[in-house]
Length: 416
Image (cartoon, rainbow, N blue to C red):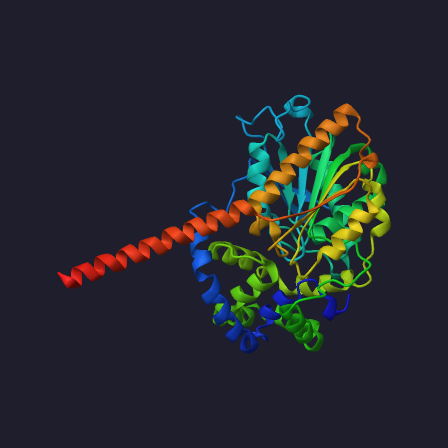
């Protein structure tokens, strides 16, 4: 796709440092509104996970792909999320394969990996070529079709048999569709469940809304690859730009990634992943989105239990993209989350975790009971992360009470 349709336009604009002047005033305003909420949501929970296994899978064109595996927790429950008994022995349960999106890495799945592991499932996460700890490929290898082949290689090497549940975010969902297009037999025989998280099957423009999206589109339209390319050869300059504009960088990432307050640590974590992607990789992937359309491949998943999960305020892949997926897969369940942006797995982790665990449970049961999934009616629900909102309000109230009591003590001390 052309630069003005780049699905990370606002983030890339922050990377270039071209939006600093315009964003500064907005950042100050937003910071004031969200500071208390972000502080209230901060937790000591670690944003890292230690895998049980690490592997390097070599593609047929020589790119080493970094893969991490989480094994089922020893104390995993024997009952499914709905209270029913899980079907089959642990080694008969589906393996969950997580595929991240453009400019992200397997680190973005930290919350989901923990939840699925604790639920008793084996989880395989991998870094797409050019991302995270995986190696880089030739410039012309950065295509969705090539990523579909890479996913097939990871499955062949590390999950050679057994049922699969595929989960993809953004470009990761596109990668799943490429797999379905080129390996329909594998998908038919082994994929019992699939989740398309904040993704698009193509056919309509990406990043088609929002103030920051418009700003980023204008910047990349004029600068785009012409700046990303040269900067990729000057990493020391890019590092200095990032250091100087750190606050603006975090603001722009927050604007494009989230639609509700998240802990500041999560913003920093997301920023480090997104902006840690090499600039030449960011640049070289742009062309693959031009004219992207995998809608015919949606039918390859019609036999599986399918979850389509997206944020109502996602400016990169708005709900209209998810609706195309639902239209193309009979029986798919569509969950639209209020106050949610593009990087929804880090913004509303508990909500997504619950739906993913339920998806894998249902997929295993559907296979065991030979349920005709395509015959089930489509379900579309708009939900709100009530638990997060309650927690935010409670913590903000507690913080305000601490501040008030502190002032009272201080006033009494002065009066004494």
